Image 1 (cartoon, rainbow, N blue to C red):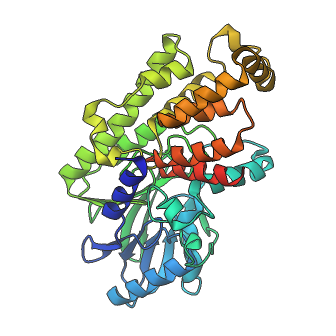
Image 2: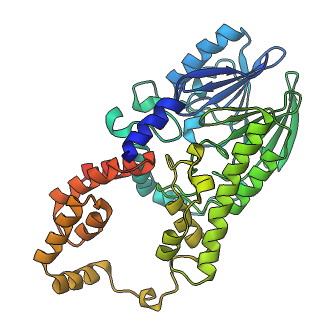
Image 3: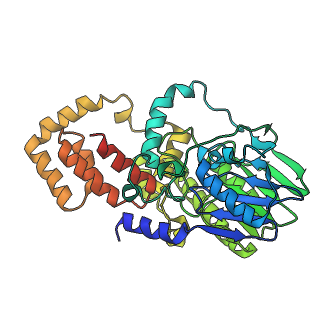
Length: 409
């Protein structure tokens, strides 16, 4: 089965619009947008955890809420600052009185804003912005964002309360909550524990496919060891319902312990195996070749590479711990790619190189073809190789990036 066929199947099975009634006062909204939302009904108002990704999607959520309760949304809690979790906040502008968020545990690198152009471009490629529904299928951990399918735009509301503490306990409109800063997919990530209900809202520190331990749009190093620690904290609670910011909710203590525990163990496996490879003197390429998920993890659909990939995770760990140098002195002071490629072509000969590229295309070895095409100016073949490589991808992010890159040639 081609990667794109697996991605379509996963999307159809996992992102149907679903309203889950957890108990009489907690509701989970899946498939109403790219991200999820959780509504907690208090004595006189609703506490909303995340607000979906666009104003129009959030208005639909508001309509659904009115079927459950006539109490207004007065409190909004952001699990983190990613726009797909905040973009619908404006739909609750008239009633929202407090908007809660946490500051990042680790500050963003100084001058990061000087990279806005390239980060914006690569983010557009990763998320498949501007692609058709057929080209994009989904965004890996959810359906496409509302702004990409004609359902509104981002409409943010800034936080009114920003915490710097590790954890904060509150009673909001009769609802007892513990909000805990938990570094993971982002440095401002939190989880929310509702002890009276034994319910935990995890934001993006857990979702049901291989996570973005590294985002190809470009990010600071995501501290994977700290992410594992956050998952350990989440698993320490006696939860009967786990409500993630993407993918399906998990209902039942045993299911949560098994599935989130396996998710945690798989991430730790990749981290420790990669560090072991590095310590043995392997190059990044050798580590990527060596570190694969064993069957006990690889056969789990909720660890499928529909969003992040194990290969990207290994590369991120390698550079996060050791930096760009792979330890081989041949690459300590390398000549430019242009000079090296010119020498290769002189050695190989254009005719022999093109014969090998065509052979790769016939054998469906599109990745090798793409890398060899970097030595040439054969844009027609490169466009075809990019599109065919996209079809092989289960990762929505990888698929988007190949297709978007083809359009720029």
